[in-house]
Image 1 (cartoon, rainbow, N blue to C red):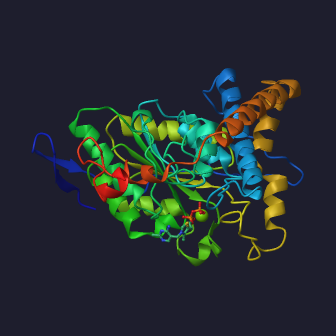
Image 2: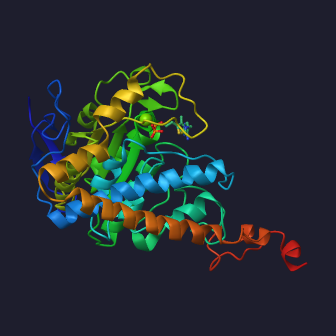
Image 3: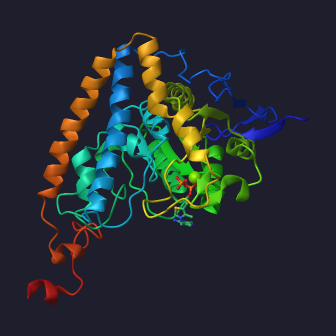
Length: 379
Ligand SMILES: Cc1ncc(C[n+]2csc(CCOP(=O)(O)OP(=O)(O)O)c2C)c(N)n1
Ligand SMILES: [Mg+2]
């Protein structure tokens, strides 16, 4: 194939680029296990024992915070739906752990673990779910729909796919401001079939922006199995369409998720461009708590629970490798439970927002006064 000539954006000179070769790494992809063998995690890691235990803490925190939210939901204290990441916690935790504090993320509803790694506290999540005044959006929005620019946390809007071009724009802006940051955007298998996903990916690829997209193949979008909404077998095959490298990772192996994202981050930070990572995982709960999952084939959920739970796998790894004792893991879990008790109490004690608060914070009030219907505000 002939080489193509491309324009160097900085110098304006023409340089030669070889034709694109599909580059998909499967080193950390899920592997088959022999009958009777119990799944663990990859031993191929640069993480220290201390970091591994920190990862364990984040995994337990994610699972137990979600369990507490379900508890509050059943007491009718939650406003809106409850979305679980049960069974796929390792994808969010492991990938976000590969970032620097000044890097940016934009999660979707199944990435609560990434929010914690980014420095969000459980109390903020509880208050947010209960639409309380002390929550990060002051009761104006729910679950992970809030943001903190100073923590590099871009709150997602509900429209699937749209956060890919938004993160691309953030990274273009950061480049113009000569900031050395990487952006990590999460997307579901369903969301990865939207037009916005393609446009955002393509723009990031052609501009060689440091965008890392984690596509979570969790087998369902609402009740639609992935095989019924896309003809590709692996979402990562689409990387070829953008001319960028891709990885398939075992999304239930927290170490693999960390290692793959770390490699992608290195690549992106060196200015080489965008990367698509596909995490193979499984959504063990319905789309939200109200979903009774009657569309799931019999035994499927139980199979993943018994043979491929990310926390069970990581516990096995930590114990087998003698990185922690059972007692140490119990001690970490007890610490997490204490924090959750304290934080959910704090959130419950928060007042509900004042109705007038709804007119503030819609636009930047340092530029636009909360001016609509001022008479109502004054009376
Ligand atoms: C553009 C758009 N279409 C439809 C919806 C409604 N919707 C919200 S979540 C969802 C399913 C998402 O599935 P997936 O992207 O696989 O993520 P998962 O829930 O599995 O994490 C749908 C269809 C939406 N929010 N935005
Ligand atoms: Mg999905």
